[in-house]
Length: 206
Image (cartoon, rainbow, N blue to C red; front, side):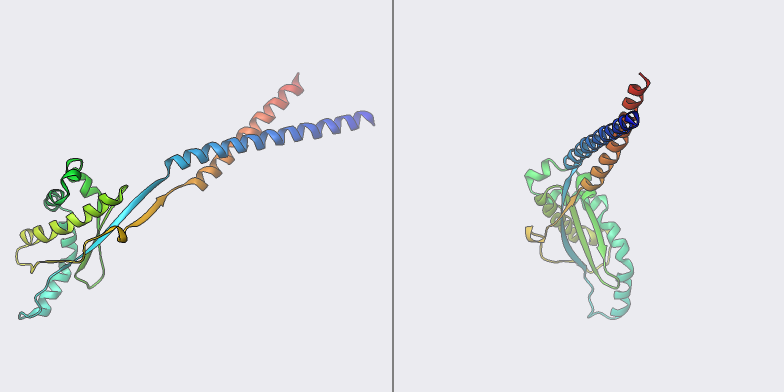
C-alpha cells in the first residue's frame, strides 16, 4: 500500500513539474513572439484628393460626349499612374522632398479609384510619413491637370478639388501582435511538452 502511495505521489509530482515546465515555455514563447510582433508593427498614412474630368455640357451632342468621357475613365486612371504624369508630379514636390524622392517612390505610393457613372477620380497616396502622403497626392493631382490634356487630345480638361491637408489623413496600423503571440504560445507549449517528456524519460531510464 505504501509503495502504491509512493508511486502515486511521485507520479503527481512528475505531472506537476511537467505542467510547470510547459507553462514556463508557453510564457517565454508567447512573450518572445509578442516582442517580435511589436517590433514589426508599422503605421501608414493615406491622403486622398479628387479630380474631375471636365465636360462642356453646353456644346452640341453633349450627352454623347459625356458618355464617351465616362467610358474613358478607366483609361484616365491608367494615364494618372503613367510615367509622364509621375515625372511631372515629382517636379511639383517641395524641393527638400524632391531631393530624396524618386519617380518610383511616387508611383508606388499612388492608387486611384472612381465611382460608377461618375467623372470624378479619387487619387490616394499611402506612405509611412503623413507629410509625404499629402505632398504626393497634391503633386499628382496638379500633374494630372497639366499632363492628361496633353496625353489625350480633345479632352475638356481636369478640375481639381481642394488640396489634401493633415485633416484628411487616414491612419492605419498594421500589426499581427495577437496572431504572433498565439503562435509563440503554441510553439512554447510544444517545446515544453518535448522537454518535459525527454527529461522525465531520461530520469526514469536512469
